[in-house]
Length: 384
Ligand SMILES: Cc1ncc(COP(=O)(O)O)c(C=O)c1O
Image 1 (tube, rainbow, N blue to C red):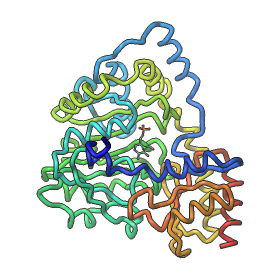
Image 2 (image 1 turned 45 degrees about the vertical axis):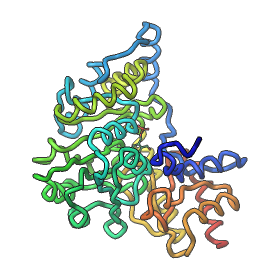
Image 3 (image 1 turned 180 degrees about the horizontal axis):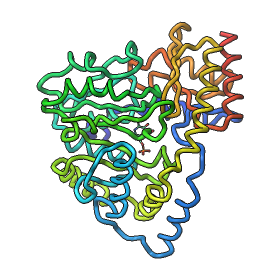
């Protein structure tokens, strides 16, 4: 019966991140530097808020768009932090993580044949969702622009089928962050055009040495931008599944229909926990960020010493060094490193064709684990 299945689904590949992580799981003593989630516990006051909600019987459906108090808190949070102002009544949807936010966004805006411009290398979540909606991902090679999408790189790909441009900064896998000026260049190119911008800002709270800028704050951009954010990375809440979308009411009302028939609402208990995160816990990410910053500096220095060249990433919790000089495919490199030194890293090829020639290391793990993992990586490189 398999031949009867939707060919868009059959064509989707399992993510390269999962492939390595599954293999690593069966190896005793493995050091995994593949982790895409914070290694800190969810702050205890958030967990307590969930307990209270459960005990108070707040275990029923919430409004489709999410609890009004949570939508207010989400709008207030991004308003205060990033200067984006959204109406909690009709411009915010609380979703099951940023993943579902991306899904409802793409399903709302795409018709078959529409093109979506994306910077490559990129987080593997987008391409399959675009294809499931009948859309066509148009990957732009950002390897020579410090992994940043620029107006110059976007321009040749714009045509009447272009429906959206994705900006995913701070970037997974590269850790690169766009400056306000760089976003302004893109805004100048895109303003007045009939297309959307999807700005995935899930790592916005994890930006070091500079401040996070959102394209939605630039004149002429708010009306065409769908901002995606959430609590998975900022509040170490990956398993709670809380994300949100911020977009003009005219777009949000249609996204809400997709969301409603897809999931009805996000988990009520998680939503009560999220209210605590976005009110009493607005600064919860700060101590975690300081820890990440010091790990980033450590890993960057170690990789540089090992001869794996890269400039220091400004955000998220990943480094993306080049291994091109070793003349090995990134999957072969990752598999050999796993077999010979029991260290798991993600091959760059998991992040589109433009990730080939790189590996992704995550520093969302304890300093002692990082030290051991990097010692083993160093031995591996010495023996190559
Ligand atoms: C760039 C990016 N967007 C979205 C997501 C999905 O986040 P969530 O766990 O909130 O669904 C991730 C998760 O790793 C990510 O890296």
